[in-house]
Image (cartoon, rainbow, N blue to C red; front, side, top):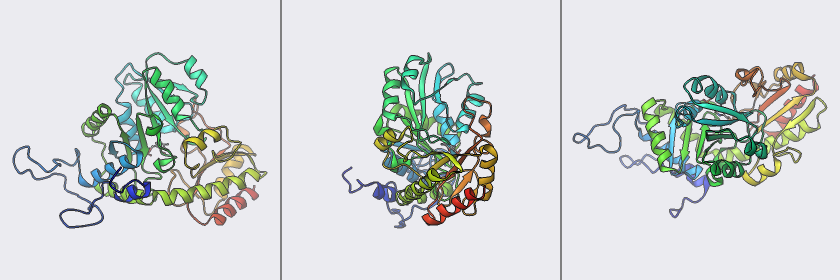
Length: 382
Ligand SMILES: Cc1ncc(COP(=O)(O)O)c(C=O)c1O
């Protein structure tokens, strides 16, 4: 960029957010109008009807596109709506390869909504590239990556999967929800599309549900724009404003999430009530080296296995005071949950089923020592 907007933090605050030309408002106004006056039939000032486009949404779309290094961004009513639009790029008969520990909602969408509509799917371990190459399912035209994954924090080598998929004529989509564009830029590593649950770190304050998709490919962009308008799962202007406001502080929040997660992971690794810590920042994590290469830092999500199995996991999630027992993640406040019975209940009995001893933490940006002490007292109480 040549307009003084090279830095991530600068773009987070300014991209798509010029002062309002009509009033000078520094913050993009929340434009509520569902329709826009035309000067003559077909002559409008960029907006016709708010499902097709809205100024607050456009500011958000330009900002997330800039942060991901994309030409175009598209906002949706939720992460699932964004995923649905992207998966609908596949015509019936084509196949998507999804990771064996994808977010449960992604698996449910593919297996129970899109498969009955004729889209084929296969489940693979995307960390085993030799097996993926050997067993590449016929007709695969899309590979879905999540990295780090929810909830096991598995790290997938984005550039290597892109090389494998592109050589076989498949597009690659990366769900960048856990890493955010501050920590990881999948398009620069070869991905074709990035999707987000903006409900998480982009919004950052657990007060909005949203999603988005970005791409550099003009044909894919045109098709996603069509689907966004045709299926209509768009966010309202206030929700767009909340995500836009959240993104302004993404960099500083992510830095603090990473510091706190590192401290929490270190304590857990030493605690006798924990049998295994899943955090890409730990040197013994199987994806540590790849994460160190493709991420700026290791993120704010930490999972661990309770040594005492499911009963111990359930006792820990009930015993924290600062970590609130709740689904979702990526907000400023720390959350704890039991994936097998909560966020990932929809994959019980499927190839994506989660170990019932697993506990997932969304480490917030509170005082580091308070978070570590809270988890320690919960584990000590077992
Ligand atoms: C990695 C990931 N992708 C997508 C989604 C779906 O997003 P939403 O809940 O905003 O629809 C989630 C939700 O938890 C998620 O964790």
